[in-house]
Every structure is written in structure tokens, then in C-alpha cells.
Image (cartoon, rainbow, N blue to C red; front, side, top):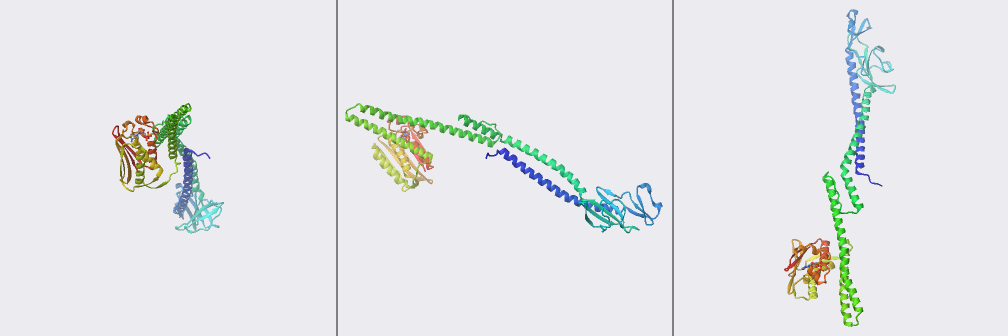
Length: 463
Ligand code: ADP
């Protein structure tokens, strides 16, 4: 399934949120509005009926009538009933009618049932269904001189108030979704604008990838710290990729170059001895071939170990190693091998332990001590020290040999790198120190070198 874009996710999320919100607001508006209106309607009906009750008066005499005022007069008992012009028979959907017993004297009755069916009850608000609609009824018996037996009945339909609410709701139902639509479109546009630099980065990274030109870099406007960082990280990644491609190329060319020389020597020696009868010449040639063959085999072995460490496929046998004993063994062995007029001085703190693979650590120490012999001057000295400092185990191999030029100090850790002095010797491979660095990296150890040309070098491994 294709993953949704962040834009789509944001837009969908906001749309759903807004629709739910609008729905909740409409429902709440309806429920609250309905109950508020209901209680308002009831209150208004009661007030109207009670106010109207004060607008009635009994007149005994015709002379007391004031026809110009707009009041109504109904014949009643021996006189007249004056209904003041302030009497409201109908107001905002509320009907107030005047009854003498069961007889309607004044006003209208919106529901079919008269007092015969719905009897008067003083000051009591009731509900009555008529033609599927709910009505409120409120009765007041009129007080006053000669007004006994008169009742005022107020009636109003529930839908009167509700219809106003319905109009408001209908308006909101149109307005709120329109507002939601505006918000969603706005949200989409904003998220599109905010995510535009990401799209740009994706497009540019894609085109660098498909064009295989790793020297190109991602270039975006200075829009936000996050996208700048992303572009920067991408560019750094391209830098590293380019570096590793370059060093891969360099490595292949160096390795083939280094292997070509011994192979050429072997082939030349073979050609030479095949044309010779003398067995002494044969012997010498075979010795050369064996030396070159051994060098090639060592080189191939080292390269294989490199690759295995790099890929993490090397089989490590980690154990609790007595580093002091191990270093002592290496020093003894190297002194025997080199047979040079160089004195090896040891200064070891006893029983320093480390969890590591014996073979790899031995190789690392051997490379350092062998270099000290190889690049040492005769007569000369080597100092191998092993001590613990600030919770670190430190191995130091110092010589007073030929030293290394400052500008070469960085390069000696590279694969196949040899200084000019070393090249002259012919036996070195230029792989020893890069192996030391690789093994140190495997054990999170720090490596340091101090050297002065003509005076000597010191190599430090800090575990
Ligand atoms: P190799 O010794 O096989 O040439 P290394 O990787 O061990 O390869 O060393 C790389 C280069 O660093 C050497 O060729 C040499 O020039 C220089 N080097 C290493 N150790 C020393 C040392 N103790 N004194 C002077 N030069 C050194």
C-alpha cells in the first residue's frame, strides 16, 4: 500500500477534527438552545397571562365606557366587562383567551380542546398534545370585584420557539461547514507550503541518486532550521558516500599495484631460472620467489582480515586477557626475530587485564613493536610501557629511530601508505598501521602518535 503524504495526513486529520467539532457544536447548540427556549417560552406565557389578568374590569354603567381609548367592552352580568387596550390576545405565538366558565368570551383557542376537556387549574403550567404537537397551557382565575368565574387561559405551541432555533441551527449548519471547508483548504495550503522544502529535498536527492553524480549537492532556500538541517545531513551523507567511493577506488588501485610488483618479480625469476642450468642460481631464484610469495600471502591475509573487521564478519574469541603477559611475549619474540643492535626496554605494570580477542591484540602490538625495530637506528633503543591511568589502560611503544615527518603523520594510518624511507627497504606492505587503527576502533581505543624526524617516534594506544 502506498504511504500517505504528510500533507494528506494533516489535511485528513484536520478535516475529521473540524467535522466532529462542528457536529458537536451544532448538537450542543440545539440541545442548549432548546432547553433555554423552552424555559423562556414557559416564563413568557406565565407573565403574559398574569399581566393580562390585570387588564380586566367590570363596569356597571354604560357611561363609564371610554370608546375612543380602543378598549373592548363585552356585556357581562348586569353591566360590561372592560378589556383594556393593553390586553394582549396574541403575542409571539402565545394566545391568551378569556373564559366565563366553559364559554369563550374573548380571544382564540389554537387547540381543539376547550375547558370542557382540559379543566382550569389555577397557576399551573401543563402540557397538552394536539395534532402531534406539544402545547403549554397556563390558567389564571381573574380576581376582582364581580369578576368571579372568569378565567384567562394562555396557550402556546412548543414549536413556536423551536422554529426560531431551527432557523438559527439551519444557518449554522450551512455556515459552520463552509467555515470548516475554508479551514481545511487553508490547512492544506499551509501544510503544502510548509512541506515544500521537503519535496524539494526529495526531488533533488532523487535526481542526484538517479544521475549518479555524487558531486552535486542539495540546495534549498533558507526556510526553516529543520529543513536546513535535513539538507545539510543529506549533503554530509553525499560527502561521505563520495569519500568512501573514492577510497574504494583508491584501495582497488593500490592493492592491484602492490600485488603487481611481487608477481612481476616472481615471473621474472621464473623466466630467468628456466634458462639456467646451474643449481645454485635455481636456489637463489627460488628463495626470491618464496620471499615475494610470502609477502603476497601476508598481504592477502591482511586484506582479508581488514575486510572481515570492517564488515563485522570476523570471528572474535573474546577472553579476559592478561595484557602484561601478552605484551611481554610479543617483545621477546620480536627481539629474537630482528636480531638488531637495538635494546628493548620494558616497563610493564603487572597483571593488567582486558577483554579482547588474543589474536587481534597480539597482531596490533606486534605491528607497533616490529615497526619500532624496522625503523629504528642501530645502535638504538625501544621502550615498551604498559600502565593504567585514569581508568584507561595505556600501551606506549617508543623508539629513537628515523622518525616521521610531520606532514606524513596523518597519512601513515592509511592502507598501503609508506614513507619514502620505508619504500627503499622493499619489505614493508604499508598495511600494518592501518590494521592497528582498525583493531583499535573495534575496541573503542584511541590511537596517538608523536614523532620527530631523525629523533624517533612514540605510538600510544589508550584502551
Ligand atoms: P609498513 O611498516 O609495512 O610500511 P605500516 O602501516 O606499519 O606499514 O607503517 C606505515 C608507514 O609509517 C611506514 O612505511 C613507515 O614509513 C612509517 N612508520 C611506521 N612506524 C614507524 C616508526 N616507528 N618510525 C618511523 N616510521 C614509522
